[in-house]
Amino acid sequence: MDDLSRDAYAVLLPAFDKVEFTEASTSFFTAGGVASLLGSTREEYVARRMSAARQQSETPQLLLDYHDRARALAGDVLVAIDYELGGVHRLHNLGPQLPHPREVLEMKEAEVEHFGVEAARAAKSCGINFFLAPVVDLVTGSNPWLRDRTFSVDADVVSHAASAFIRGVQSQGVAATAKHFPGHPHVPADPHDSATVTVTASLEDLKPNLKCFDAAIAAGVRAIMTGPIPVDAIDPNEPSSTSAKVVAMLRGAHRFRGLIVSDDLDLPGTLRGRTVPEAAVASLKAGVDLLLLAGGPQVDEVARSIIASVHAGKLERDVVARAANAVRLLAADSALSLQAV
Image (cartoon, rainbow, N blue to C red; front, side):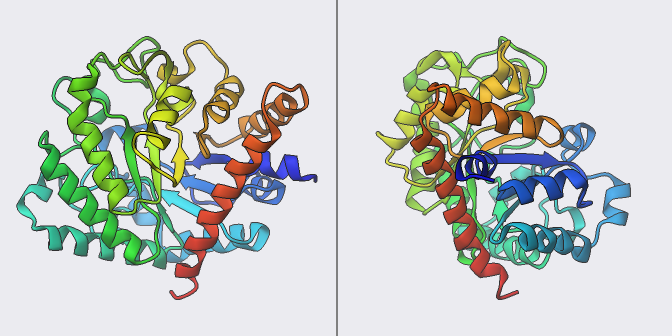
C-alpha cells in the first residue's frame, strides 16, 4: 500500500459502537488507520448514559484488548471516547463520573483538575488515550443537541473549569479535545435531524464562547473539534467542520497549533445534501486534520474518495500528508503514557 493510501486512512476517525475488534477494525488499522472512536448507540447518546447491558458486559480488559490489537497492526494509535464533564460519558462505571454537568459548579478548580487526573488514569487502564472532551459551548438559548452537556453560560466559569479538566487529563498523557468551535449559543434544531439549522449568533454574541476556547488553548489542549453546522457570522455557506474560514480563524486569530477534529460528518446538518466522501474531502481542503465519521463500509469509500481527489488535482497531496502526520504525532505522544500503565 502506497503512502497516499495510508495517509488517506490516517486522517479518518471511524466511530464503532461496539468494542469487538471486527474485520472492519482489522482492515482499517492494517490499511493505515491510526485513530478510532469507541462510540455509543444513538439511544445511549441521547440518554447521555451507556445502557445497562453495556455496563454489564464491558470490562477494562475488553477495552484494553481493543487497543492492543490495534497497536499490533498499526503501531502508535489513538483510541478515543467521549468523556464529558457529566454529559456523554462512554466509559460508564469504569471511571469516575459526575451525575450532571452542573455538578462542576460545586467543585473548586483543584477538584475539577483531580477529576481529570482520575478520569485519565481510568481511561489509560482501559487502553484509551484520547478524550473528545470537554464541551465548552455556552448555551444561552434553545439547543436540543447540547442538552445536559453544558454547565454554565458564564465564560469565566467554563474557562476555569474546562482548563482545569484539560490540565488534569493531559498531565496523565491523555489528549483532550475542546469542542465545538466556535460555539453554539442557540441552535433550535438538532443537527442530527435538521439539514438547514445554522448558528445565527453575531460575532459579538460569540465573543464569550471564543474566550473559552482561548482559555483551553492557553491550557495546552491538544485538539479542538469544530462544530457541525454553519455559523452565519463567519461562514453562512459551510458548516464549521468543512469551513476554511472557521479553520483560518482558529489557526489565525486564536493561534491554535494542535489537532483539528471535525464533528460527525454523517450528520444532515453537516452534509447539506453532500455525500460523506464529498464532505470528507471538503473538510480536508478546509484544513481539518482528523475526520469523524461512522465506522463500516463507508470508511473505505471515503479513503478512496480522498485518494481519487488527490489524483484528480482537486485536493493537494501535501494537505493530506500534513494532516496524517499531525494525527500520527499525537498518537506517538499519547502512546508514551500507555506504556507506563
